Amino acid sequence: MKPILVFFALLTFSATAGSRQTVTEFNWKDPAQTGLPRGTAPVLLDGRAALKIENTNVAPLQLSLLTIAKPKISAQMYAVQGEVRYDAVQGDGYLEMWNYFPPVKPGLPEGQYFSRTLGDSGEMGKISGTSDWRPFSLPFDSAGASGPPTELQINLILRGRGTVYLGPIKLVQYPVAKSFFYGNTAHPWWSHRAYLWVMILGSGIFIGFNLLIVALSVKGKGRGFVFALLRLLIGLGILLGATTIVAFAQQQPFWVWFPLLLEAFLLLTIFGAWLFTVGRIYQELELRRMQALDASG
Image 1 (spheres, rainbow, N blue to C red):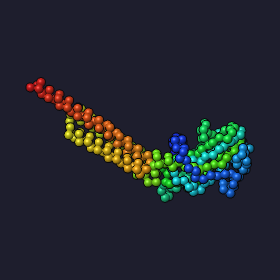
Image 2: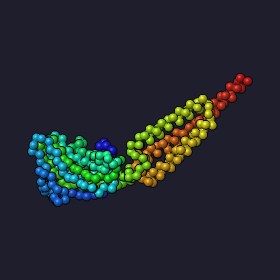
Image 3: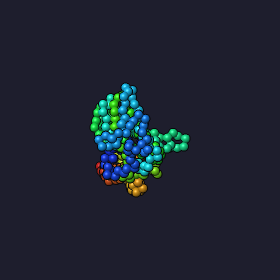
Image 4: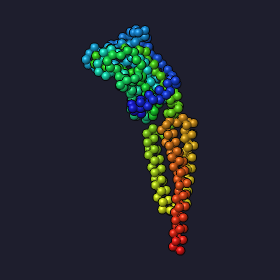
C-alpha cells in the first residue's frame, strides 16, 4: 500500500462509479459540524456554501481543513470529493488527505499514508493559477491495512499567495470495487507481502520442472518418471484451479487468488501440452533406436 496505488484506485473508481456510496457530507455553513480552521471564513459563492482560504503572505501556507475521526468506512476503496475554485494562486498548491490506521502489531506505530492532488489535470489536478469551480478527488486504496482507518485529515497546502474556495465535500466509498477485484481483506489466506514470495516460489518450481522434463526427454531417459511427474503436475493444476474457485467464493483479495489462478493456468496449459509432446519425443527416439539396431544387425 503506497501512494502510487492511488492510480489503480482511480482506474477502478472509473469502472465502478455507479456503486459509489456516500458515507457522510460536510457543509461549511454549519461550523458545528466541521469546525472552521483559523483564518478562514464561510461564504456564499455562486449559490453554494464555501470555505474561503486566503494566503496574503509570500510564505507557504499549510492549513488543516477537516479531521474525520473514526469514519464509518466499510469498503477498501474510498475517497473525499468535492469542488474547488481558486484565484491567482502562486506556485503549485494541492489538497491532501492523510489516512491513519491501527498498528499492524502491538507496539508498532500506526500506519500513515496520503493522497494528494498533484496531477497536471483532472480531479487530482494541482491548485495553481486561476480556475472556476471544478471537481476534486482524494481517493485511497487501503489494501493490506490492519483495518478501517481511524482518522482522516484533509489539508490545504499553498506555496505562495492566492485565494481558494472549497465547496461542500463528501466522504464516499466503493463497495463493489472491494468485492469484485480486491475481495475481503479482513481475513486473507496470506499477507500482501507474502504475495511476492508465493509468486517467486511458484515460478521457481515451474521453471525447475520444465528444465527437468526437457533434460530427461531429449535424452530418452526416465520415461515412466516423466509421465508420472506430468500427471502429478496436471493434477496439481486442477487442485489449484479448484482452490481459486474457493478463493473467489470467499472473496479473497487479488494477492491470494491471482497467483493461484496463474499457476493453475500455467500447469494445465504448459504441462498438458508437454504430456502429448513428450510422448512423441520418446516414440521418435525409440523408433530411431530400433532403426539403428536393424541397421547394425
